[in-house]
Length: 561
Image (tube, rainbow, N blue to C red; front, top):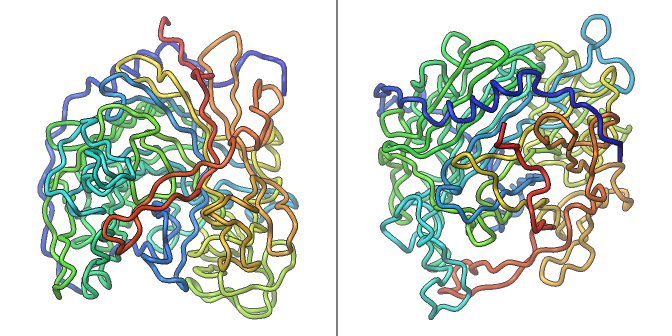
């Protein structure tokens, strides 16, 4: 750990603190209607069975099937407060990471890494009402209410988990620049970041053991996503609903969408409104802003749950936050993670693809090519692109659908932020959120490694027994049966000037003042109650996460400034 120094973050501190309040007081923009019935030929949706950008479900084999497992490795910071409104309105200050300067011809220098190699996205999260989503036992959901807390395993209890209102999860995602463009990849631009509001839902009834009909599942998936880029005028550029979404939904448009530079300082606010969750992003560096409301008029919608049908129907819907507060009890009951209000990084999906074989864009890494470290390519190396497909950085690679459950790709090397900005990116830097102008009282650090270390998954078959917690490791085991070279951890800068900031990666000289014991900061195994699929209300206890809850928020924003 490093001694406190004067921070190099947020040079215009006072104006940024004032912006925290400004973001919450912005007037709701008028939104326009979007087409609701595109032709079948134009439809496109995110397939969570083959996407690195979806919420990790607690039992993916039941949702996607064993051969379609998707592993979402998500180190996270959780924020808890008993203050009413803390579960549905908050403001962060964020500094976007920067990348090192590549060599001639934009070819990486030896030892260099870039944001798109470490993560396809990082995001801010929140639980949402969705009566057409898991567990599908209640026809209503009262937004912004702790009456929605149902996590008791006793079927006779008032708060039995099986009575939980239908739940979705918001991921307010930020996408790094420099590699393959959306919708095949996830970069919006060669040098600029973009952002999108994602709301993930699950068409599954665990009590009765049913899920969405095959026709609809084939169109949008069992886990499906409402998606809309953050735009400069707050109007969605195309339908957000997975039933009605088109290629235009997922194609960045610099004329409409908010693009941001690496190193820009942002205020990011999430809050409920009469027509649904609203996101506002203010870029204090470029003086631009963007927004999005998860409203029916912006094309957001539920997918009607119809397990015995043969159609796929959109229900126009305003998505509202689920809870009033944020605590250990405000969960998404179908998700692997335990949280409501959280920051998370999506890691583990980028793999190298080097060798003599010619790479066909958006295909497998050719047989005979090698992954990072020289190992032969394998079946997980999917969605691969040659360097010529990149918007900037000339590197062959794979945006792996199935994640790297072998824990040996670039995100599991010592290529994370460490202060060496000639070789590695800077860290994503963000403040703890404020809610109603106040700090969250408590914080937790969590990672879902047990969920993706399980037997039968990955090249080494996995090791973790989620029933007992045996052989579950904070430093995951690779397919060579050795600990991964690295696993990123959270730290903070808490200096004498300016706000405390969160960092992710390695210790950073001149910034890191407390790393919470590095990977030990994620704490111990967390066991939670889940519904057994088709078990008529039977529950089981499993571990999907490591979690440490701090008694007090170690990184508060100085609200007195």
